[in-house]
Image (cartoon, rainbow, N blue to C red; front, side):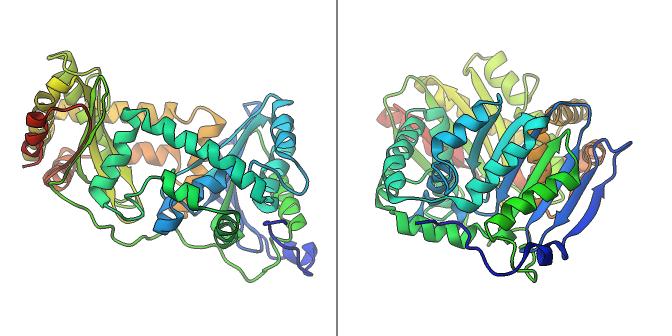
Length: 458
């Protein structure tokens, strides 16, 4: 029984007639040029050309994540991600993996709160193979009951692996602390109970509902030709009958629904670990908020590197933690700002006091000009260095198309970072860090220690 797209009577020549191509970013001599073609059925294909490399990365982004799940379906998006590797009407799971291995490529996928991505990185000469395989997986998956049952154990092991890593698990706990029992507060992997309750029919219905071409963005970067990629993608989707609706248009970027967030909440998960793992944080900014550039500079200066305030105060001056950092997460309508530290259980309150003092100090006083200058340089450099391979380029253009519906050049991003002013950093520090924080802790805290955790959020 095939769960994939069903063929229709409309011909591929009719489909080709409505394809629309735009140049979104124009590079010099074709280098860095980003183009978009919208195919019938609403499928978008975006590419970035980089002739100087010998590799290419091809990916398909889907506008579905754990945020789109009901409580009973929690974990279905990630479960489905696993199942699309299990075989199609044309290939077995072994055929899929061995074909990529045979050309020295790599293939994987990831699921997030608001999207899913499947990708393959290969030599440029092997790009047609990667396109055919990934498109076949997305359009022709069988999702057989036997595979659902077999993969259930793998997903449960992944959940167990995450729970065995408290430094990872504490971030799931913090999401629940902030958002409660809502789609954003539930774990991407699901729970043992929800995974055990999911069957083939429910997952197949979820697939059919969300894996529509209008919800997909195809992205490719490297030594590629845009027209050739479009032709190969169109052929693969035509074969599955997925591009028959010539009147369909792509879905708009997700807008979300103002998530419920908490303040002053404390969650403690008692675990017999060597370290206590803590996240102290508050509401952040959505990914479309224009203040996100200033928040990026603030985050870098506060906890983004070895010269950051938190690293210097907690680790360098006092030796209270090995790992301490701050981070931001932006969603369609909201965000999170968090500070993580892992320390000896006896040092938890000292670490939390220092972190809270620094957050309050920056909220009240902002950052020095020197801190801002250093953070701008660090953020600019890491932005460029993070785009030095075709996989990163594919991620950038694919996510930009799916989440923003537009592309921004590297020079424009660097310009936005460089334009951040001390006043803007100070304003976003007051707006974000001025919130009453919430706290998540995993570790073996004694009763008196646990009773004092409210001090960190009061």
